Length: 422
Image 1 (cartoon, rainbow, N blue to C red):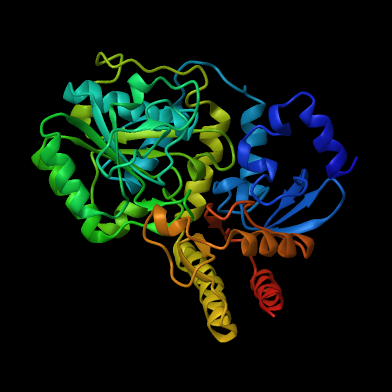
Image 2 (image 1 turned 90 degrees about the vertical axis):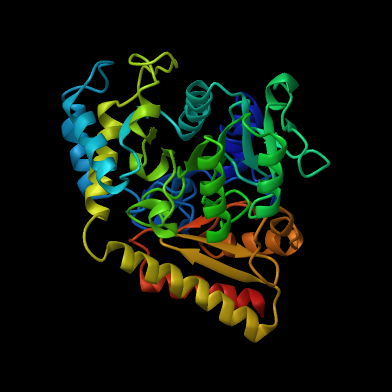
């Protein structure tokens, strides 16, 4: 079967034909690609077409597809059992490994997804502080739980309104939505809602309005205000944890949050999430505390094994230096070409994560991120796809490299981008 036939059949039984909305190609048009296999930096679709993959299952595959060490370990573990629903020794080893690289995570609870991790973090912060209000930022995506699927109101300090039907306004009116990288709004919010804010949740590097790092001034202001007001600071590092650096974005910005949420890379390609933070906060989780959270498949042997082996492999010396050099070569080459050809495209990256922006300068917030040439992006996406390069089918998603992307992969990609610019 070809991609078009499979998509038409899928639409008859799966809403939109996909199990996650961005896969439907609605932002770019055309027929979604059905992948059949992946190895290293490449994926192959059901029609036999091969692509250099810059999505990497949306971030987890920092080692590339089908890494032999991980496959071998998974095969060994599967013979012992898929899931038990009881504690296992490997969960302890995994938690200790995460803590080693994220010292701010003094205690850790494993869950099954990034959405589950951020949802739990919000509940825990509210339970710990006894407060209801939370702050998030326009353009930062923290999963699809009710309190976090919120967009900004008409004014800078208005309470949030739901971004989806099915979410009660009574829930989202406890969410304050501010502009990313805006220190003045932070000051105003904490003055207006003094002693009422349970927590602030932020992506230190936003990955769903493309790739937009927070400024050091902004993150330090966040840390100062939350400390003074006894609010919990949550870093959502589901995308950035073990992706931009071994210790995540917090190790680069030198800002220590109270709670960190992780996902993506820590599963090595299998579903997982984690929440961790200060001991006194984490002890509020059941069974030691009264904030309830549970999960049947939390810490299952397969996900934990894949994650543990991934972290071991990326912990080797020079891994992130090599990965960062690949990313730097890609974004520097794009910027040089766009400047030379006078094209309104710019790029930026860090670790194994990058953004390509269809505007002259990299954006610093949501308003700038959506101020782009969408028609140009659609043409860009389909030109690359036709020529064997797969990027995210949305102008507002970050891109991901793996250590398996070769110099030839990068040079071919740059050569195609140059042809597109011409």
